[in-house]
Image 1 (cartoon, helix red, strand yellow):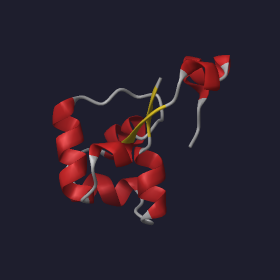
Image 2 (cartoon, rainbow, N blue to C red; image 1 turned 120 degrees about the horizontal axis):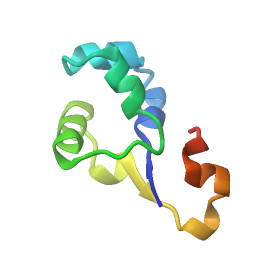
Image 3 (tube, rainbow, N blue to C red; image 1 turned 135 degrees about the horizontal axis):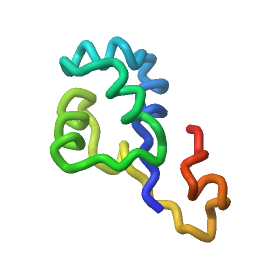
Length: 80
C-alpha cells in the first residue's frame, strides 16, 4: 500500500496547509484533500510538490506492505 506523507512533511517543516496552498497557487481545499495519507498523487502533482518543498518522491510517498496495515487503514482511515 502506498502511503502519502505530504501532511507529515508539511508538519515537519511547520508549513500550514493554507500557507502551502498559497505557495503553489492552489486552493486550500485541494491541499487539505491531497494531504490525506490515502489520497493518490499523480506524477504532475508529485513534480509540483517536490519542486516547491525541495524533496524527493520518496519523502512524500512510502510503501507499506498490506500485511502491516489494518483493515481501517486500508479503507482510508490512516492519519499521519
